[in-house]
Image 1 (tube, helix red, strand yellow):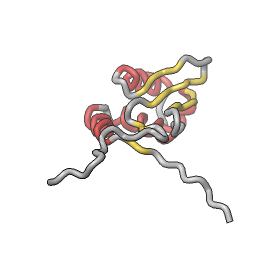
Image 2 (cartoon, rainbow, N blue to C red):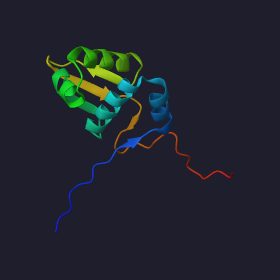
Image 3 (cartoon, rainbow, N blue to C red):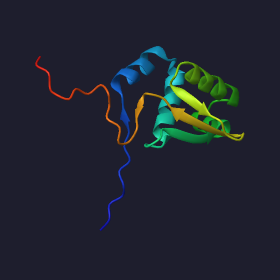
Image 4 (cartoon, rainbow, N blue to C red):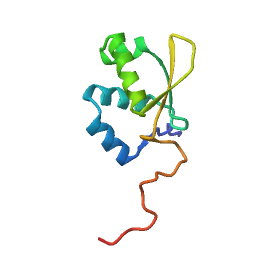
Length: 111
């Protein structure tokens, strides 16, 4: 009997809190969708504006504006690619596979 691989994501609490409190709700939804779609080792997402628009029920202009805001605020990076394909990389919110999160103490602290 074989078991299917378990895909998981690890997010940084501080950056998640910042995203959920500082971003517009629409931007947070797009960011979280991209985090779920991202590759666990490099944080990259390959998609198109049209595909994101269909998944989210948004117009292409709204998707483009939202992605631009996320890039401007440091939550995403755009990687050069041939249109219409978008190559995006999720920023510091996502802990890459094999990378230790920076906000977890090594030793328990006394309360």
